[in-house]
Length: 230
Image (cartoon, rainbow, N blue to C red):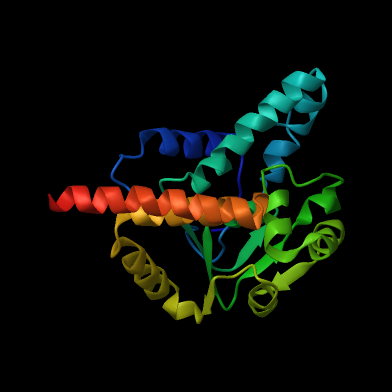
């Protein structure tokens, strides 16, 4: 299976986010079969129904952008502050598939993983909340080259430029994701949440602001830990 994506799938992903139990700490996103995701289902895009190019192009600008915002919501929840999300990537992750992997906090790649931001080959732009994350991970110049050429990156290159958290042999992907998940779950949930917030916001803060954020987070942790022991 190639796990192509369409508006119905994005609605289902939004539904998962709303129905997720509050005690869930780690979410693993994986594709069934030999590919993580081949990207947008072009048969749907070329049709005339909801989410098709024809239908969206006929909408007023704001309605078109609102519809895209709904698609983006299927990806945005994966970096919620109370969760750590892991993409387990095997085979191709193309276009929307690449952006789905980028939406996750961490990416564990099998050695056969292949990324491509292929929207440009259709005359489109990446619009599923992946552009900022890509720039944060690899820098502006590299992100521009990846998006404007649509070329494919193998797992070794993804690892070298900072897209991969870990690269493992194909047969070890499940075990590697399991070990990473266990490591995350072994520690205090609230401490992990505070750490994620500190790191996620660091690029937007000065050194002074970041140090203040550290002090505030540590004060909250100390109060909670001492309160537990009383």
